[in-house]
Structure formats: C-alpha cells, structure tokens
Image (tube, rainbow, N blue to C red; front, side):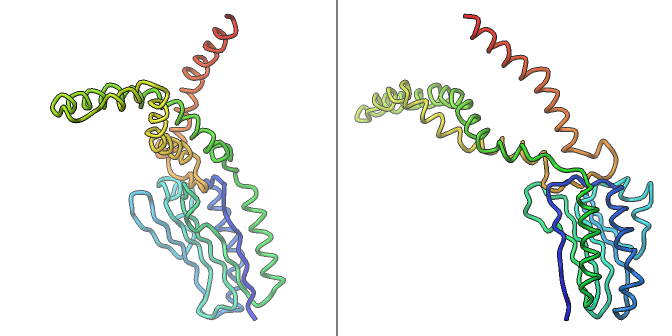
Length: 258
C-alpha cells in the first residue's frame, strides 16, 4: 500500500538559498528511495522568465553563482523517483501572482513512518521561508470601493465634457431628439452615480495590479535588477512616503484646524 502526502506552498518568498536548501533536503533521501524503487534518478528542471528551459540530474543549477543566482525563474521541478511508485519526492514550484498555479511537494512511499518523517522535515523547511505580506489581499475589496469613489469625479468630468457636447450635437442635428433630461441627469447627483459606475472596472484593474506586486508565491531569484515586483514595491513605498501620506496629512490638518 502506497501512502501519499503533500506539502502546500503558499504566501511565501522563495530565494535562491531556499531552493538550494530544498534540493539538499530532497537529495538526502536518494539512497533510501534507491533501495525501494527501480531505476531511481534525480531530475531538476526549470524555466526562466524569458522562456529558456534547463534540465539537470544533479545539483549544478543550484551551485552558488549558477542559474538560480543569475536567472529569474518562472517554474521549477525537483524530483527523486524511480519507475516503480514505491517511494518518491516531487517538488513543483511556480512564480504565482494570483494563487492559481501548482505549488506543492508530494511525498509517496510504502513506509508510513518514512513518508511522515520526510513531510515533517519539509514542512519545517518551508515554514522557515520568508512570509509574503497578506495585507494587500485583505484590503483589496475596501481599496476597490475607495478607488471607485475616488475615481468617480474624474469619470463624471469625462461624462460632462465628452457626453454632454455629443448630446448637444445630436439635439442640434435632430430636433425630435430630446436630450435635456440626459444633460440634467449628468449635472446632478445621478451624474456622480454614473461616474462611480464607470469607475468600477478601472478601479478593479488598478487594485488587481497593486495586489500582483505581492505574489502568492514569489520566486525571488536572479540579480537584483530582475526583481520587478520588489522594485515596484520600493517605488510604491517611496511614493506613499514622499507624496501620498504628506498630502493626506496636510488635508487632515487643514480640515481640523478650521
């Protein structure tokens, strides 16, 4: 009887050193698996962000200064297994902005003690990895609502200066077309409501782009200039610190000093 267990990988930042540790932990069990399976082999495969694929049967891609230190990785697979399914360890990791990709380590074997022991060590290893920030996904819906309301005035201005002239042109060309009700609607609170309606999708897109800066699983490999999300987070932090927060504080001070 074969027992199978999985270690789920989520909400973590994985560095090149983490990948080296993972490979070494899996490779420790090569001799055991070799005793319980036929034609056992090591397999490592990865795909970089530029689409290049690499494969190896050893540790070379994890050596210091190797591929994991010089390339930004999109997907990675580490496997120690044989032709018989008696014992195997299989890790699948992907850079995952939205949480819709496979990120797990599967362990299978006929010895329950061995399977549970390996899973326990792997869970401990994964728990030591840097945790990804949760707050962007927690505040996503409130931020979407706030962004929708905040973008409504701009949408309302667009309605007033684009739609109203078009309605006037239609009314001038066609005397039977009554546009006064529509124009009056755009000038009242209903125009603000329409502005909110038009802002829903742009606000959602903006918030989605913000959330993607904190991937559910972030493969932080390669050189510093290749870390796009990390660079954009730093830029966002700079803008918030230098521009947004002082502006909000000044408005609050002016409001309460009245």
